[in-house]
Amino acid sequence: MIRQDDTSQGDGDINAAGAFAGVRGNGVVLRALRMAAWTWVVGLVMLTAVPAAERPDTGLPHDLEHFVAFLGAGGLLALTHKWSAMRLAAGGIAFALLIELMQIPLSSRHARVLDFVVDAAAVVAGVLAVCGLKLYAIRRRRVTQSAQ
Image 1: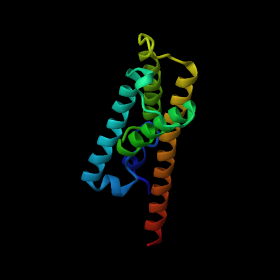
Image 2: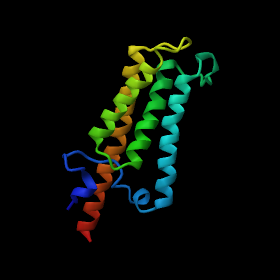
Image 3: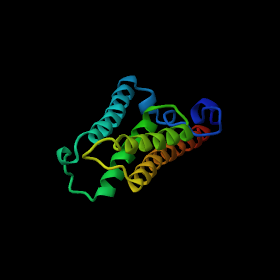
Image 4: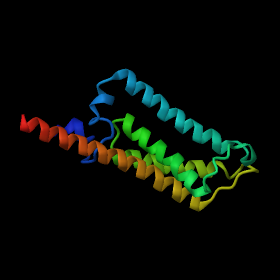
C-alpha cells in the first residue's frame, strides 16, 4: 500500500521527493542535490539581471535555451523537495513571472510574454517529469514488495 506521506501532502497531489529512496535515504546526496537546485535558481536570477551582452551564449535557439534552463530548475526542485506537484508548479509559474517582471526596469533587458510562457511550461514539465518518475518508482516498489 502507498502511504500518505510517500505520495502526497494531504491535498491528493503527488509530492516530489519521497519515492526515490536513493535520494531520500542518503542525506548527503539529498543535501548536495538541494544545493544544486537552489544554485540553479539563483543562477537564473543572476543571468536575468546581467546585461544581455554579458550573458554566455550557448548557441541554442532562444526559446530552447529558456526551456532547458527552467526545465532543469523545475526538475531539480521537484526531486529534492517534498512539496506537492501543485505547489511546485504554482511556485515555478510565479518564479517565471517574477523573472520576466524583474526585467522591466532593466535598460538592457526586455520582458516578453512568450519567454514567460516558455519558462512556465518548462518548470511545469520538469515538475511533472520528476513526479511521474516518482509515481512510477512508488508503484514499482509496491509491486515488488507485494510479490515477496
